[in-house]
Length: 268
Figure (cartoon, rainbow, N blue to C red):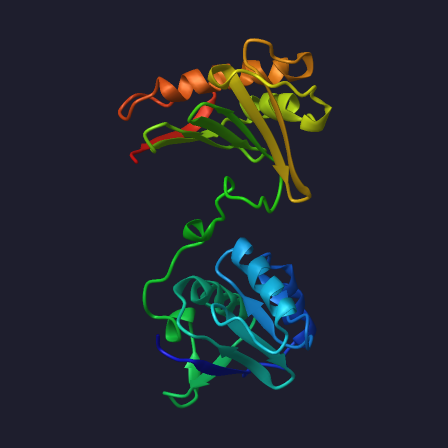
């Protein structure tokens, strides 16, 4: 880490506090401090940001340390950090945005003020990319969209409404894939149901299906026998059967199956 605290001053015009704060407020992995309303907190991932905000509200005398704090003032912008690569990557991207909008100088506790020509001036080393910082859509709690899980025995197929697919195998490995647009539309139409509307059944353990539908509002579940699929669930069961077969039948080195745009298999 090259610094803990950096002070940035604009050299080609005034600091547009409103524009900078509006940009920060638009970032899903950032939030304005809900306690004092002044600083902004940059986290590596959206999920991390929400967890940190909840922690800040629960403990208002403390500030989470795993993010970068940004203070926007009429005479400059201050960055304070503790060396977490993921949040530093977000700060680097924010700094690059600032430099696209104007010219800046920077000083840190280790270096005198000097012109800043690129984000590499403060972040010269490798940091995670935006792709590295994508939230896992299969992780609970769901932060956007809907996640449908279909479990039989030790196998679980989970499909997010954004297109991410994961088949959890009994031995612990997974097959991850992404649905093509037409297949995703078909899946989302079939999965758009409320498990609480499904008649409860107490199936035999060997033929039991657990259906879970999770959204940011909560998680709902239903159980039924796979040999007696409820009528309202039948379109979804057809989608599951087709997708399940496709994923289990694929092996590395084979072409990407029809209906998918990508597929990978990971060991346990």
